[in-house]
Amino acid sequence: MTVRIFETPLTSVTVDTNIMAAGDALGAQLSLEVPDSGIIKAILITDVDDEAGTTQNVWFFRSQPAVIATNAAFALADADLEKVIANRLINDEFDAINGRVRYEECNIPYRTDGGLLWLQLENAAGTPTYAAATNIKIKLFIEW
Image (cartoon, rainbow, N blue to C red):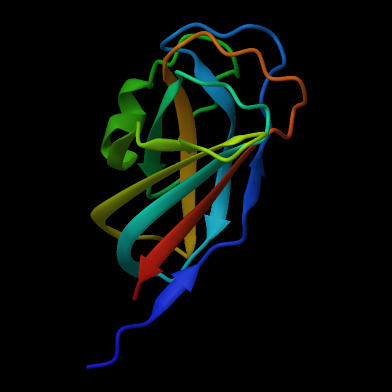
């Protein structure tokens, strides 16, 4: 059996440049084009602003959830609970000289409706202040 790995493009997460608290939504929700079904094997998050000591939760949804404003308390609407595929804490990081890279191996099976996977990041710990709205980027590695 041949194992195929699909990589999403490294995609900007539009973040707020004001100070954030733990539990705030980190950036706007986004959708990524992915195979209709697969297993998310790894998540890569790059941070060129070098915000040390922060961790993120990545929430995965099978269809678009209600909008959670960036830099506002992360709270899912009741109707969105059934859309959740998984949530993954990303806390492994390494310093990349002038930035940070976070990488998490995982094993998250999913199925989408129409090849779009919806994501929302949550600032799990730390109080980052990003200098530019495009400092955070995310990429998924998917076995399909």
